[in-house]
Length: 153
Image 1 (cartoon, helix red, strand yellow):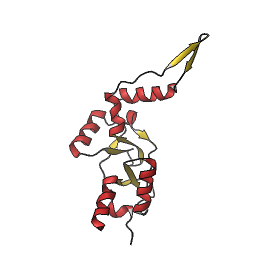
Image 2 (cartoon, rainbow, N blue to C red):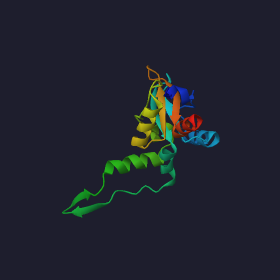
Image 3 (cartoon, rainbow, N blue to C red):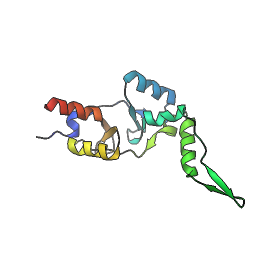
């Protein structure tokens, strides 16, 4: 019988709220040795996810998009909206300002094979597991899948 997401996910994951100070989230990630946290509202509904990747912006130099001037017109060679988003992440002080919104999620009854395919195809490291009413009930990581594979050997 094939395993489901519920069989191997981490139950009751550590979550943070959008108004959580960024430094607090960084401490949680470091102390618990995890790479991401679901972000929830007061009712426990998923708003986003904050990961190490989102936090890396704090340590990078955000450079304005390249542009050229032609006849007093500015023509951007890159999307200026991307620069604004990156700058906002670099300067953010709360989880909500830095988190990735609309993360890909999965339900607990899906097969582990299906979860692995989603993670591989989308190049993501974790999937928040949601109940039918959008409540975060677990998190599935690549490590969880690898440990499940090792246990079958």
